[in-house]
Image (cartoon, rainbow, N blue to C red; front, side, top):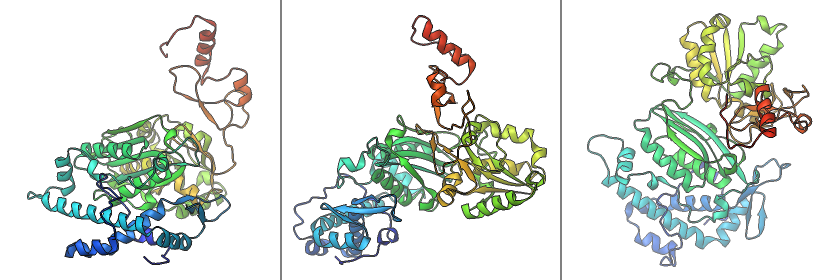
Length: 477
């Protein structure tokens, strides 16, 4: 084992995904793996030995990662044997000299897995030309065979606590043609449960859309599984995943299901396809376009429209300067909004954006299909990726998210106000009236005065309910 290794070693190798989780990493029969392994391996697997050893080393190092202090430019440090390492060379040297036995045992495990995988793929090679992965799922009846091996990790590393510093929320989507989304659904359910992840995953014949929360190790393993899975590896890249502080506690449960659309626009993908979306602009390119628009003396007369295709309660607490924010409550209302305002978009260049980019994929396709715009562009990676690069850019306020955090803060700007007194306020709470799921902006002072409902009707209901006889529930009007 070398005494030092490049800090990018883990990224240069294939993602460290260990399948067949029933393998024993502590096989005591391998007393001297460096000799026994090479002696026992056949010709094909001997060629895999070096790769397996590098993968085992990279995986072990990843288990030792800890979050670096906020004032450090690096995101990760490493902690092992009660020692803190701030550079990759130090942790690599420590692991190679102090943990050689663990690395060799894990190398043996990886080689076993590779041998089983090779044997399985040969036995399941289809004669009718079907997707090998689909055939494999059919034989195994579920996706349990495509789970990462977590036997080498302590449960504490996989299960995040209620401290946002300990966990992470992962947001991603991938448009591609899936022949049978139902067995992908079964696999995703097994995978998320295996890693103690909560959240929402939507699967359709047009692709997959996921937001999952858990420990940083669990979300990292999930991402690596997705990047290495034969179905997605040619469509997904590491940059397609957006991360934020959070954890499994950000979602009440795990919900995985098959739908017609991976984002509910209300129009069949066969009519409006993601394949005909707008031109993708990187955060840097989008920033320049917005800067150009805002620098004009009167951008109202410009041939460019900056269009927010999110819901009104999202744009209310955060938006790009100079944007057009439709007053819609659901994304499924967006097509109707476009239809009613076609003249607004005629002969215009449209710069479209949303939270993570997924709504723009089909929203831009719908707008293009109307044939009235000069050009339609969309922000690649959405506001999430833009704020990673430009936290103090042209997006002001908070970024609304669809979980129990409600919003993420990247800057100190407050662009919304309390619904009752008008003071600056941008922290959402659920309406206090039972069974009403609307969000309300009410500042602490107004909350103290009992103003905790989303509207006059709900506020009156709350007063009557408090003064009247108790009851378990009532029907929402």
